[in-house]
Length: 218
Image (cartoon, rainbow, N blue to C red; front, side, top):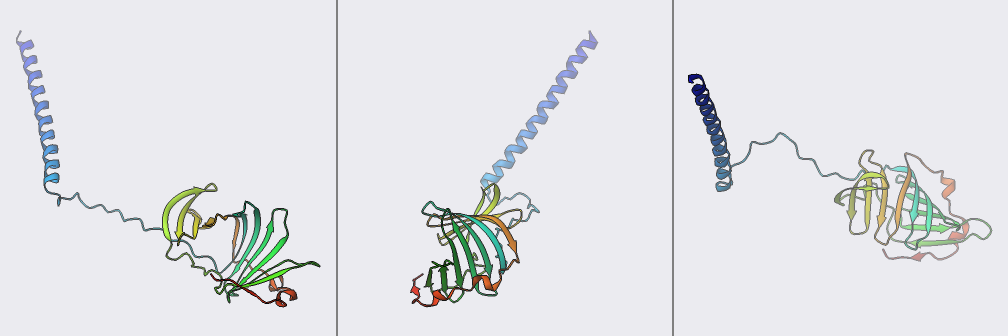
């Protein structure tokens, strides 16, 4: 009888201790939150983590070659060999529209651009835009929009002056795609930093200099 009575007393004493411990924990938790709500100046201990800086677009190499697959605003598809050469002040686009003619688009830093075809029936149009080719850091000051998956790549995305949306591969920092405000979409298929084009390829034919250049306001 005594043994049974002792066991009941021990169980009651154990339950009482557990209830007391739970009550103390609840009291401490309640008191902590009450202090935080009453006194907003109370702060948790500072974390040692460093804030992640906002990504910035990688400047273009001063010379590179890129193979581009483009969707034009008219719905036409085009393959473009882009040869960018900042030291020589030129940007060359060798364009093949779907089932169309092969077009040379040679842009110079003095604002002059030549659009021509070659052959017996070659044509040429010269346009003076008044502005040169894009600088390697032309995306400086662009607005960072976060990350998106484009063409199967996780990309950092920037927008500049509601004119261009630029997608750069997070892993390699290479351009993946850029979209223009008028609906033109450019997919970057290959990108070779440092590649150059021989000067002889971009020499405009003589018939580009027989007509008066057309002026365009930009």
